[in-house]
Image 1 (cartoon, rainbow, N blue to C red):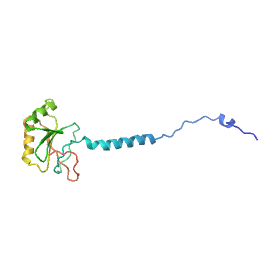
Image 2: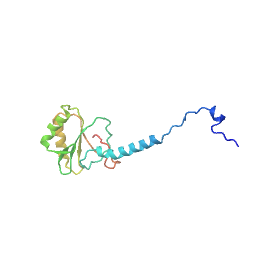
Image 3: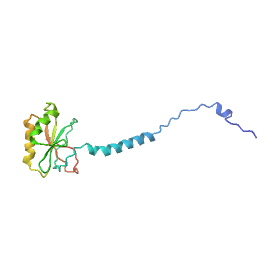
Image 4: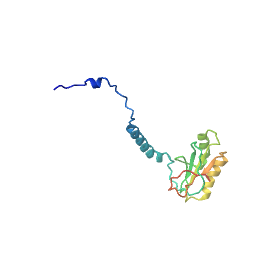
Length: 151
């Protein structure tokens, strides 16, 4: 009984490189990134709770980051997430925009607030020379966190 270990048959063959791609690590990384983005995306919105009205206007397609001015149900004014007095609104907007009056500003007014109060805020912003002021609303088929639309 003779036994060959790595006999003559194995010596003449060359090892071929493996041509299959292992995509399992790639899929794992993609799923982790998907979960991270799904968790962080809702946190990137402005933090003031405002019940937005619904509209059928088309979505804005500009990609630059706008400033958000919100008027809540009690009539308080917020610049981004910070409460601000109406008299301080224009100087702070000018400081943030660094004199660029073509910076986009979204005015978010609660559905329950008086229309006149929202117009006062828009009038202050417009009187300061800002030309790209838009109202934010929710599309009728969106739940409440829809994309900003311009009226």
